[in-house]
Length: 148
Image 1 (tube, rainbow, N blue to C red):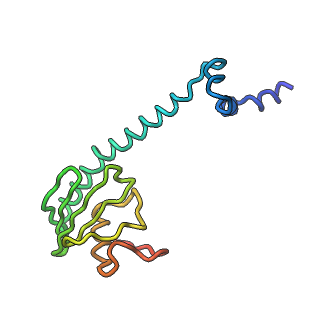
Image 2 (image 1 turned 90 degrees about the vertical axis):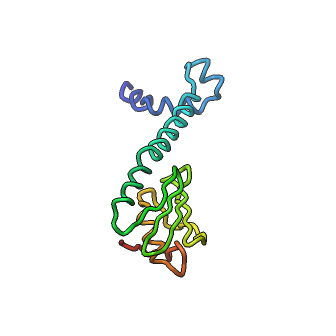
Image 3 (image 1 turned 90 degrees about the horizontal axis):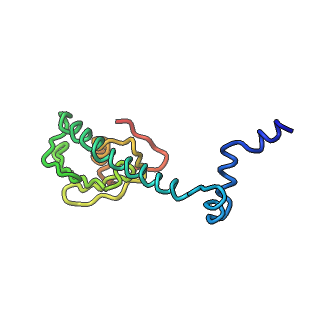
């Protein structure tokens, strides 16, 4: 009997059972506030985005500046103008970068959005791929992977 009660009332199961109850009962009986978890998730998302903006973007800018193939013309907080193989690329980095892909303009023409985007992609990879896919913009055929 004792082992059965241990199996039935594991801490994660108790938490799940509490979350199934109506909010008023959770607060009254268990003194449990599920809004804390929601607020904590908002803080985690904010920290993740802030870290991406304050840490990752400066590293990306530095990587582009140090790469001899790229000539960085202008860097603003979320706009980057880069010359690669004699062609001017304008990268507009969204607020949710690296979880959302940058928008790319090549010679003043906006290229189609990425279908293959991953948060692990660097801005140099984006520019090199757009330079390879001259005819099709930034779209890669599905199922293909290009190593740069």
